[in-house]
Image 1 (cartoon, each protein chain N blue to C red):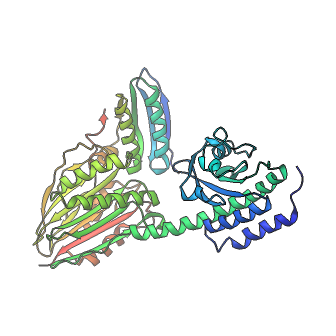
Image 2 (cartoon, each protein chain N blue to C red):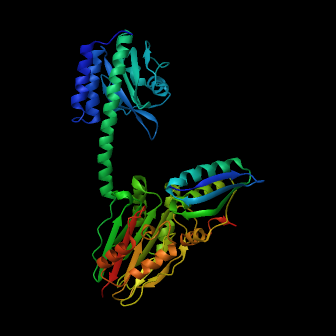
Image 3 (cartoon, each protein chain N blue to C red):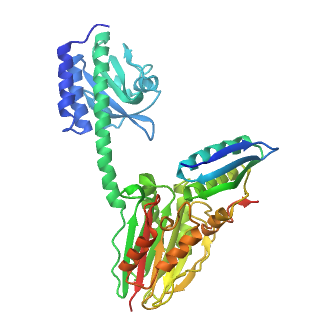
Length: 103
Length: 398
């Protein structure tokens, strides 16, 4: 079982989505849905904090890619922040480093 | 509401119980409609089933009203007589049939004057509509309604059961058609492969492919559609096929990936697919390789440690359709092997990917490809897999 938690905090736009635990098939849908509604409702966009993520697979990355597409379509921001080394490595190995705005 | 005639009911029940396993859906529906028409003294009877993809009611069987089926009648849910029954999940008795009460012109063109329709429900979901009509202006009664509602229950059950059986059979046929194709026979090259979908299914989103074009150009590919199960497998089938088509118009793997990427982006919306594609012409001593988000292949010369192919990695297909991609060349000396694989082979939750990749590298030697696949699977695969695995090994013998 994953210990994945999403919490939305509006700290003076953009909204921040804090993700922790394992981001995989069981969790990707929820991540996408919550992320999409954040992007929808926030004027600026969404920041995804991955600081406590322990594992992410292709379905998790796929959900992030979809959030990015949605943000792009609405000319809003999507930014990944606090990336752990493993996640940075995953992005490099899957050629996604240039795809996301990171901080 | 008065009780339906027990004899009539028995007749009805007898049909559905015994015929369930023998008839396919359309035959069963046809026979049922013939009986229903007699029991409620109607001139026409028809069944429309809901198509979940389009949310339309499609005429599937009819007696006395065969035009409905022949002419492919489709009614949007919410429109007209049948559409309203499906939308409200409530029966309707019509004592006038014209353009104001029904949407389907066939109904009044054939001279139907009164109608009775009931929804077909399965677990409270609408699966279709059952209706009867008369050419004379004699209204259907509450007794007729009671009989029709009972008939509807049996029709719904029969349809649901048969559908499941048909879908299961269709899935098996589809699975077989999506399984990996035979490895090519090429002078001075040996091939071996492994394909293990997750959850002990027959197919998944991973694939390998190896084929030779008429000009003797060889292509070897491994790919991974994010997700598992039948849906991922269906997407896999389309992407595998599209990629093959593009090898007929482009010789460079980077270009083939670019073309396939645009196809995926427009026609497989929301999907993400990693692919590595490599190509060579006789004597197959140099392979040109390109990767879309896919882990690098390994190459091992005779008696030498294996190395990961150094190549630029572009994003997976479906992410950035305007990407310019690039390829790299890798030499394949005589007796050397090239190994392509998907990330299910190495990715494990609690182990850093780097460690697993190193474990894989140490397992690869310039061996007979069958032995190599055996060694690699034996050392890397354990009970802890929840992803598809595909492995493809090529050795040059000349």
